[in-house]
Image (cartoon, rainbow, N blue to C red; front, side, top):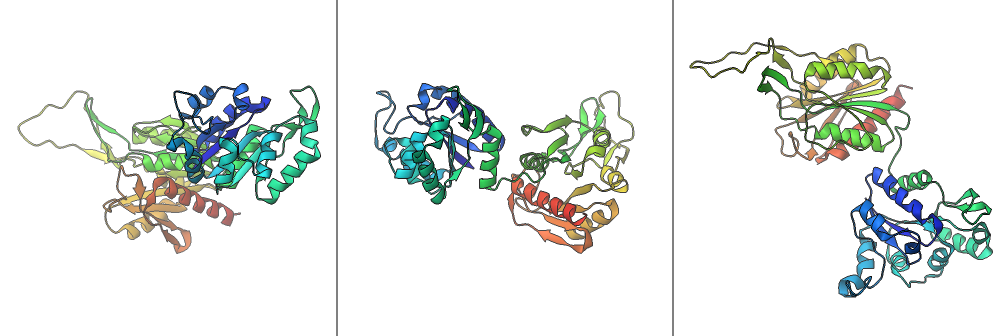
Length: 402
């Protein structure tokens, strides 16, 4: 989702840099728009470095190096159409007055009139300015028009006075943004353990058995759970994926290492999601030296790997346990058998032969099989959306067990 962050000319403008980072933790794309007054307190380069995007400072080009043209003349319309929220923090008394009276004499005020996206303002100013009838009247006008106002905090102000007018805490602003955009924090206070990726079982020092799992589904689950407020422990087999920000990453390689890591941490987790593609078999004895090519065939003796999901199911307690089933045939039959046999609360099953549902894809097509014979088939969607649907069902299971 895209946010335009308007930064106006107040001492609190420096806090907008921290706000950018906080919003980025919610995976929000932030486009910064600065007034001339804001540039007296903090440089555009700071925001450009944080966001990796152009910082808009002028309506028709910033200087002779970027003269006015047709593109710059309608840039406010382009930005207005692509954003999901216009947030102004800090919002000065001046910008509140301009918004309230429809004055459009710079990029930010013009953007405000041009956008159909929700608007949120976080005022910051001297206490007397905040309490002045004109400012309060402007705030009431904006509230009546549907503008969301994050009231300033009370405390010691930069001017030396004490009272209301200090910019609300960055966390408070971010929480209001998440609420307005429908970004939930419904796993706040919970710890969720998620496994992801393949395992590798050694044959000899240069070869191993593995599978085609990329880890994308497990990593999407970890990112979604973290964004919804959970502390996430991600036990991951070898992948090339970027570790989701804010997630505790525990790398493992073999099925036995994954089992050990899971059981070392599962006791403190209210939810365990086994999304990893754990190898079903490993060599009975790993060859200490590289196997050389011979004239005849080669036979490898395999033995089963630990059944991590089954072990968890036998000592599940009150935690919610979710398993995954990647199938090539008889999907429903195999998923239901796994649900009953492993003691899980839910099995997320897919037919990996379907286009858009196999390994190493960005999408998935799954059916959720739950206790009591309930099931929910999901259409083809990206894995992050699938992850959120799985987490929705986890919440429902928790609520039903209360």
